[in-house]
Length: 266
Image 1: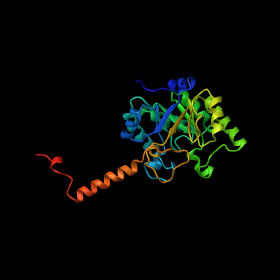
Image 2: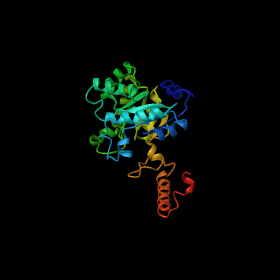
Image 3: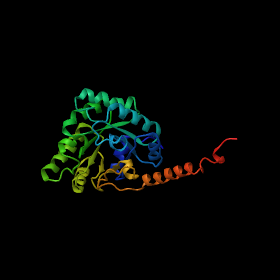
Image 4: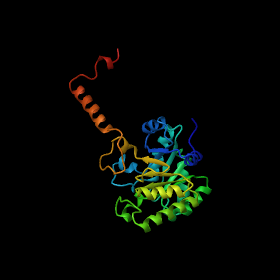
């Protein structure tokens, strides 16, 4: 199976086939996601919360994102790898944005990058695209704007706010984004944006009408318990399974059951 490209994303939208995406942050989990046949792996700055134990994504650095993306790229044979641009890797200016986005492709093996924002990053998207760096834009709830937004809240609930997000979506498309991530917005608003754009939309907390879906892997597997967003569906409880295994190991060591002669050398 060949590597998924942005052309495959666009083709899926035209053919009305859903795009599947999950986050991953290291080699073992990226390998599993890729083996499952998903279209894309997002190395999200959400790693700050689910891997590093931080309160939000803001402290995550470019070097940390490069480190994790490199591991994921090494494990991923077919899925598109998308590097998530962390806070202050692009906000200070277009030159910084292009340089840092290029690092994801040059140093970390990603095929594309994602950045938060619409109109305010339109020129960033335009210049990156001209520099042969494919960009996924991200509007709605943008976690790097947590302080301005006053927390993790659904966006676009009023008519004015909804119209603004529609405008932002078109601006991102016109600037050259190959796809658009919609986070935590009302279902019908996501449906409207999806129908109006020619590029695919990827939803997270945006309902069933987007062209594709993404979730944080640790939420899907039951490995993150600090809070569970309304839009998350858990498909496993790996924390409970891991705890059982570790408790059994502890008991066997304490009781002299492990290691047995079977685990020894002669």
